[in-house]
Image (cartoon, rainbow, N blue to C red; front, side, top):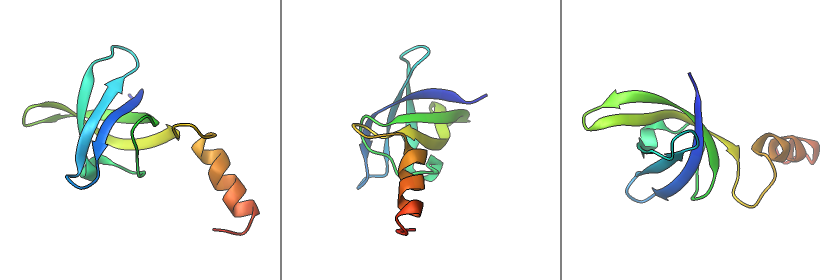
Length: 85
């Protein structure tokens, strides 16, 4: 079952970060290999949980809403309309 949360911190250089879950405010580790979309701090995301070596890890992470922007799908639709993609 997909869960939702917010990217609390993500270090692109090191390839990992943490997601704060909406339903419990528990934090989950996320590695760059678990990302479907590129993320930045503050993005609202949807994810699945998978058992890792040190606990539950967020995987299949997709962006629902970018920090300080409109929904991701709206941005893609605008880019298609403008011929940018």
